[in-house]
Image 1 (tube, rainbow, N blue to C red):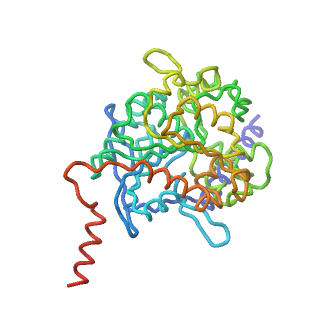
Image 2: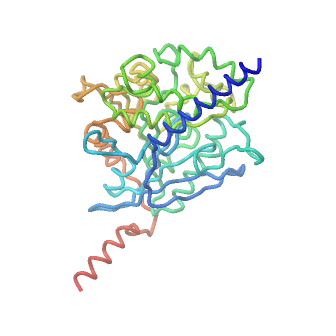
Image 3: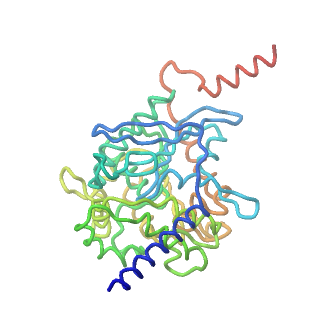
Length: 388
């Protein structure tokens, strides 16, 4: 028995060592200009990573980059690149074009308050805490630092779902436009990879914390090497640098609250996610959201399939909504998976410009009496000094 226990402990130690080595080898580190913190009404401190506007026209329209289910701000800036395998950063790309970019972290993520031994926080939150506490605090904080009265919201996966919920509940005064990357509002009978694993969601009712961070970090040891179905869960491997795909699994994914897992499993029931106040499906309220939205997906996205993307677009559809599914049928150089839309090899030339074009159709509104952005003022001051 003692020998068996020692063998088990040895195997666990070896697995942990391999995971730690892999996490360091495929380290992801963002390169923001500033780090800020917003505090929710229920006392959680959330981090915001700011990329100041630059380029020829630093107008400073604010953009909030909102990560998904278990991800973090790193999903938009992995901080790794080379000439052979480009890993684009949506955060830097938008900042280079004059936008004031804020990549956020919800509760339980890096640099935000996270449950740990002997602190007051616990893995007991649900989607409703994101909707009612985190997102309002983040939006309000960004606008408090901006010369604009509304912002652009780019949400990846669950970040887009929370965009839908926010706009349905709060309307459009604070959101100039929204871009949902690989996001749906009703995943029932949509052919998603999650169809196969959703039945196991009930097991999470018996635990408080789902250790997705460690689990995916371990699986990253074997990732991005083929085009099997499990590999396609996050990316279409030929369209993403191998090191980027492994970095997402090794360092971007975090542990999550079991309540969030259980609640998201509702998406696969007819009608999808439901409101807290009356239990009505969100999809029934979708047409009440007047915010301009761009529903952007990938033809090989195994989480939010083209069927789900189209269903969501039709639920919201009005003259201010657009849809585009990246892939060869739309003139792209390859297929697109779930994360490819933000970190794909061709995202900088095939996806990002479409987001920019949508923003330019739906400009943010400057606050009354506000002139140039701080960045623009600095540039004007330098120009004046040079002329003198």
